[in-house]
Length: 271
Ligand SMILES: C[S@@+](CC[C@H](N)C(=O)[O-])C[C@H]1O[C@@H](n2cnc3c(N)ncnc32)[C@H](O)[C@@H]1O
Image (cartoon, rainbow, N blue to C red):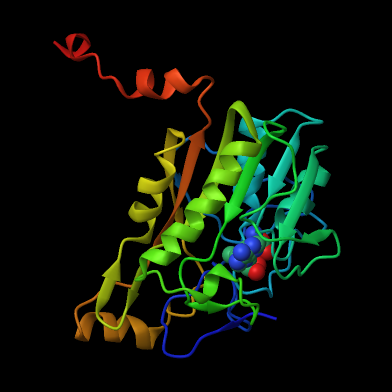
């Protein structure tokens, strides 16, 4: 079972703090999340609807509304969605309710339908998947497990962290059908007076293989650091608490030439 590491002020989950009440929601039990039309996503709860999606006590659980939005935008009923780091299975629960096929893997599964597997070797054929969603570790700020292969045991200040995530990115690239999309949720780190731009560093790696569709800013809610004492420290010691995560939305090029074409800027257009 995951637990927050002491000494770190930033955690993965938006809603992980037991006993901290989530803000009131306007979403009724039978309703779906709203279809997002801007690049700022802010949601007061981890889940929606009558049935739970993932386990909101799992530290690092993904907001279900976010996966719902990717599924609505980039897949059709019957399409195959894969989450290589599925944890407590939020992707599985969302996709099943939306009539999508879904496979979730994790090194240490926390959901009965998640299969044990290392994300650096995904047991699926090339170009067989319609959408990949990943909410990876953001460094070693959360202790997911003692498994020696857990990427969450490597500090985001260490280049090895990005090398291992790049292996996951390459597998994602391999299994995605050409033209299909991947969403990767990632957050930056500020620990012990040091900022690490984890999102930018991961983006650099992903952009080697995938075209950028867009970057969404997802508000971090219910953080353990969003308390009076941490706001006081942030003012007194002149630093910022993390307020958002990046959702990097990227597409596998249709052909190897198309990535080059996509990055060519036609300046004449702007004259
Ligand atoms: C942020 S959590 C995922 C949360 C999940 N989306 C959910 O809603 O419950 C990150 C996950 O990455 C997993 N992980 C770390 N290293 C891994 C690896 N090498 N292969 C597969 N999963 C890994 C951890 O076990 C953890 O469950």
